[in-house]
Length: 469
Image (cartoon, rainbow, N blue to C red; front, side, top):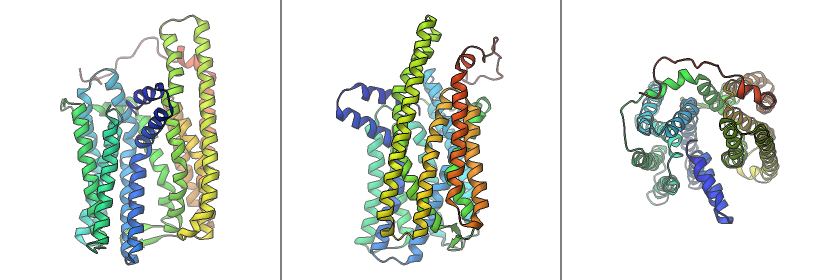
């Protein structure tokens, strides 16, 4: 996440409780804000429609359409996340800012084309009303663009503008929906989608404005970043399989006994999807804490170690820096595990108390508990994956994510007939976590070899210039 670390370190250097609150709040907004606000808005709409006794078919159609847009927009853009983050970080380091704005337009064009064609084919034979298909299509495209812009906004310096854009966009959509329902008595799902489009359009326009204000020059080399797919192909694999892993097990369950078709178009499984949604919320605190710990305490120790190597410090100083780096890494990783374990216990306790009030059955609550424990392993596994990427072990990171994603989908397929769906996430996350920890431990035990001996003695010249010179 290019740029976020600089601001976080600045905030934590400021003493006081309020400075820490600001740092964690900013980390939360950048890390999970877009997705959390999107989910919160859709939940708010569902509750409003329920409060005014909107027909079940309308509420179900809104839920299915928004769920599809949310899931598949992330899957389409997920593979680009790590590639773009690496590219933007490199361009900032090289002070080639003119390459950044053009790359954003290039990524947008590719993802919008992929998503647009896929959605067009999906809706082509749907019996849904043409107007509803159109506004849902627009919402899907807006989400794709917003997820891409989120890869770039962390490099901006005016973070309050980012926070305000998120909140104002959500408030605009929420207020428009509230007015439609409470005052205009319009309950149609098409109207709800139009209101969502208005808020996300505002968000999209403001993000574009801020990014263009910061990265003023567009060199029109829109696809220069594609060279990074050749240079770092495993980053795409890692990003894509991580995103697919979030929802892959849902896609398999949709084909099983809990399958439910909405309006002869959307295939979902509410029995499974609802517990998954609530269980996934339990990992958000760990994601925020990890960004803070990675970009502050660990990065400082990491940078000190490698700076002493590059600047030919005495061996004693290098070994001391390595010891400090290992100590901080183990402490931060243990802290994240403790926080996530505490969050999982609290989530289970709150779920047992309040989920029945939301209409979840005993079987769904059992599924929720298994998934919360599975996501405990999952988020620790993802933490290990990012640490592997920090040490540039792209192969280890990508294999770890592939193990989880393929494992969870295959096990879900196997378990579907036996009604043991949640265990697929639990088992796959545990196996991938153990593998990731083994890879990380192996790397750290041999860090001297990877640092001093694994690089070629004579650099190989690459064809083409990745920096556009």
